[in-house]
Amino acid sequence: ACEGVPLVALLRAAGAMPQEPMRGGDLDRYVQVDANDGYRAVFSLAELDPTLGANPVVLADRCDGAPLDASDGPLRLVAPRESRPARWVRQVKSITVIAAP
Image 1 (tube, rainbow, N blue to C red):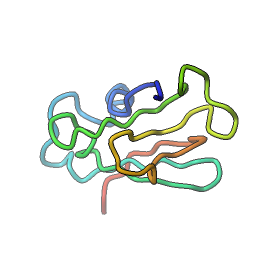
Image 2 (image 1 turned 180 degrees about the horizontal axis):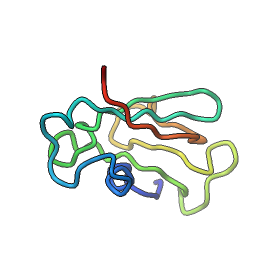
Image 3 (image 1 turned 90 degrees about the horizontal axis):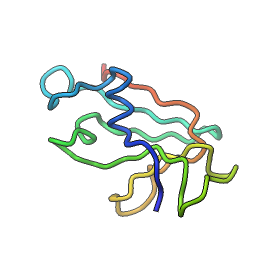
Image 4 (image 1 turned 45 degrees about the vertical axis):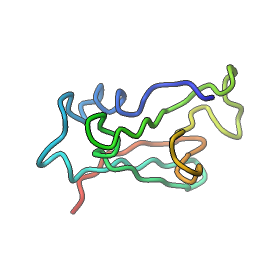
């Protein structure tokens, strides 16, 4: 199991996601997570909101009790409830919140 900061907590602390349940204009935004090697994954803010999608995505710095090694870290985005790890991002370089056009 991996440990770290829930992505929703990070987004709320940065002011990129409201503390209260999302509605209206908040629902057109998404998070783009980029890796050092060019890999990229996208999550809608609505799917991360605990009152809507409740997808518990974590920005991890440790897995199985140990710090991530260079091939995965120093930070890795994990989405443990997804059926396969296609949107897990190793070596996270940036996290950007974007409003859909």
